[in-house]
Amino acid sequence: MLEALRGLATAALLAAATVYFLAWRFGESRRLAHIYSLGFSDPVLSYWSAFLMQIDSKRYIQKQWERVPPGTKWVKLPGFIRWYVLPFGTEEFQALTRASDDIVSSTEAVNEYLHARHTLRNDIIGDGIQVPLINTELTRSLGELVPEVNEEALAALDEMFPLQGNEWKSFLVSPALLQIFAKVANRVLVGLPLCRDASYIKTNVDFAVNVIVMSFVLCATPPPLRDLVDRLVSPIPKKFERIRGYLQPIIDARRAEKEKLGAEYEPHPDMLSWLIDLAEQHGRDDRDIILRMMSTNFGVIHTASMNFQHAFYSLLSMPQYMEELRAEVVQCIDEHGWSKTAVDNMKLMDGFIKESQRLNIIGIIIGNRIATKDCTLAGVFIPKGTMLTANVVEAHNSRDFWGSTVDEFDPYRYIRMEKETGKKLGIVTTSANSLSFGLGRHSCPGRFFAAQELKLLMAHLLLDYEMKFDKKEQSRPKDVWFGMSCMPNPNTRVLLRKRVKA
Ligand code: HEM
Image 1 (cartoon, rainbow, N blue to C red):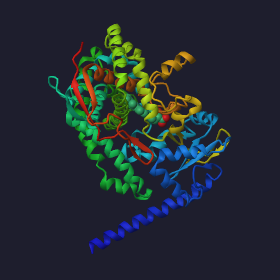
Image 2: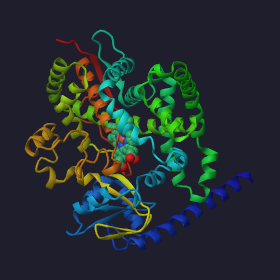
Image 3: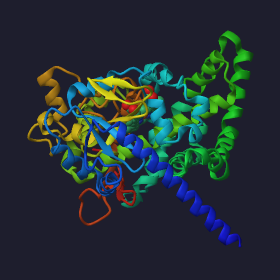
Image 4: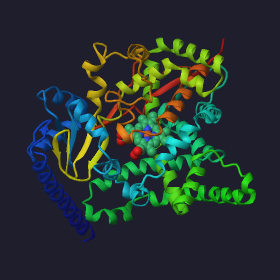
């Protein structure tokens, strides 16, 4: 009896979800009929296109893009849940990057694809007032933070890759790098000793996975049922309580220290301190501070770790660049010590990581925004509720822009282009053809810190380790694609050995 009832409830839920999504999709297809389709435009047949797109999204968008008639302004890409509208020409791309927040909202887009109102509690912290802290406090402190980031990078590498004598040892890269990046980031988010607490780090790493899984669950749930499903199955409230257990005593201790020392109080140079001050200015409670810490952790750990893995695999598959990169690190450190200037001067390393980001993308689209009202962008009507986004595959592989060597991995490309154009083209420079950190006013504010940690970690690996893939053929392991998203192969093992320095 109970089984039958459960079956009936599941069938009713599935039927409700199907009716809801079909109704939504029919309406959206009608409203976007004037925009060129990458595949079938018919609301029903477009599900077939969406299916083909999910199977091999990179090839699908590349092939369909080549067929777009010249002069087209915007195109739409079919998804199972909705259409994605993308700028086709330069003018349209600029209209998207320049559109103000009251026309296109990145927060609403995050709310939709990550279900952030539920998963990241954007109903409370969706105002994003912590974002400017990254642009100001964190980016300004990068120079001061180098010794700390450096110390943490060394400690984390030693812990995750323990080696003795001159033995070669095999390591699974992906989980080790997640821990390393979580620890290094938390050195500047919360400081010592918590950044080295294995259980705190694990809770944050797991929280990010919970967010992704819950966003899939909520995506498959019709909107009226989402609050209920979230309350019944989400593991996130428990994660919040665990993180609160770690952070609340530190928040209390810092407040007590400030009260005791008065004018002599030296604030800790980390995100937690900046958030405590921010909460005071805006009259927010400690729950607010903890949620913002969790949301920041969500944004920093997996992105940096995946970008690094891609660059690391590229390096191992092209060992011819190891000596040149090592020589550059040695020269920069000899001249400037372990400092921001030294890191900034590692131009070949910069170009190597940027070239890896260009060719090893983590998704075919980036910079999602939702139109919050009916509007006209570059002369074309965009209805309220449309998801706008940009094509990373085309941006990073455009033969017109990158020239005949577009398919080659060339770390010197940016040094050469900087000389030719006089423009800065480092990792942190975003443009219509470099979209790894997003686009326009909501491009990643943490990219200056991210570039520093990626370069410092790569520098230490080069100086302190010999490394190669733990498999016969030393070629890049195949990436793993899920629909429109891609990640470096998580099963990759690497052999490491302590390097004897000359
Ligand atoms: C390699 C590492 C990283 C990558 C690839 C990355 C990438 C991105 C991308 C693609 C976006 C969306 C941009 C857009 O919608 O146009 C973004 C947004 C953001 N990132 Fe990062 N990120 C990284 C590291 C970091 C770090 C270390 C921090 C903080 C310290 C950070 C904080 C943020 C924030 C707060 C936003 C939202 C900005 C806004 O809404 O205005 N990210 N990031």
